[in-house]
Image (cartoon, rainbow, N blue to C red; front, side):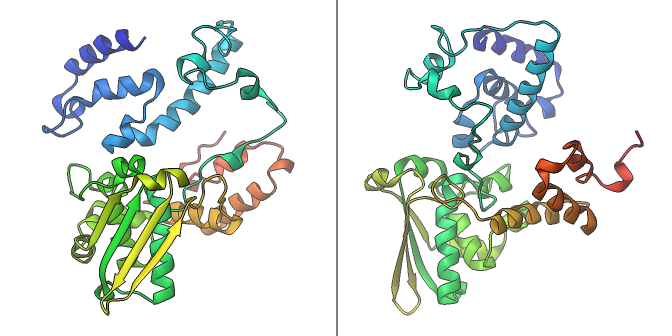
Length: 316
């Protein structure tokens, strides 16, 4: 499937205007084949490259689940041995390290949302811990940028590959910032928070944030591997020469360090506030109330209507 997708995507990209086929940049190779590659089975390469595909892969997964359910209802059959077969999921994608029995254990009865990641901050998953530690120091020391002489961030090599590179603003400033440990640290100190609005292109170029970025060092430390891929050591030296060290092994929102209900609501509220056309407050409150009473709702689709502006709702 992967091999056959490549010529198909190449053919289609040739028929598109250059701007659409090349993602609006003449300095990058066409995005079409990269997206087709992701569509075949997903890849973490989008995260390494810091591309917008990161944001649509989850949507593709959900869309595919719905499409497959509808196809099955119409009699289209799929492989029955998709787990234990010679080309089944555990072998093809799990390198034979997954137990097919355990993969479906508790299916329909056990819900594993608490084993998923819910990011506290709107940036790459491996920037969550360093952002958390930075904000703790901002609050504890009442830090301002001029009181910071230097910040040293130590990350496992895996995380460093994702976010440890020097910060540069390229074709997509928002993604450049979200995948930069240096930006996330400087932003947290300058703005004393980490919100969606802080990653707008015009905010990414802020002079105060970029001046502080020059005082942030990010180091790959293999010793942190033993503590997990989100482990972080952060040492901040103040202008008077004092150095304060903070460490965190499990980032907030990751299994083992779950977010509280209040923190989950804060994430939602930040998303609502960031909308170009914010929802009326009464709808936001009704949605939150509906989520709290989800098990008693007669139709969960009512929640979807509450996320649509009143003037855009079409009469049934």
